[in-house]
Length: 111
Image 1 (cartoon, rainbow, N blue to C red):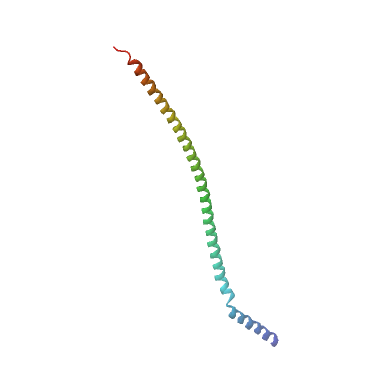
Image 2: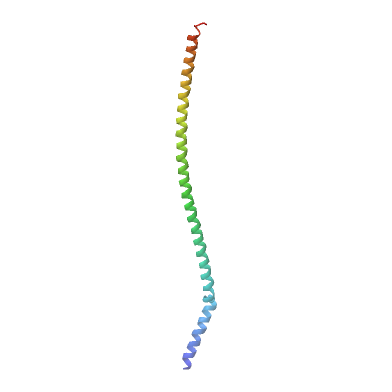
């Protein structure tokens, strides 16, 4: 019986020596776990921020596409307006020419 106690004491001494060399794994394990959890939470927060940025970029891209479409519509309206103004200028010139012709025709008559 003496021998098993000696063997048991030896195992305890060896375990204590290993813990002293490596540091107490239980006391280091908790801060390590806490640090790991903190890093995991930071990574999760960062991932959420990245996701929010990606969503915002998608929304901005869609808004840019909508703006481009609206600019094209405005350009089309401007072109139509330019054509209408050109036709109006031609019509004014034609009316001016008719007025000149009428004036010349009427100027022959004297009262």
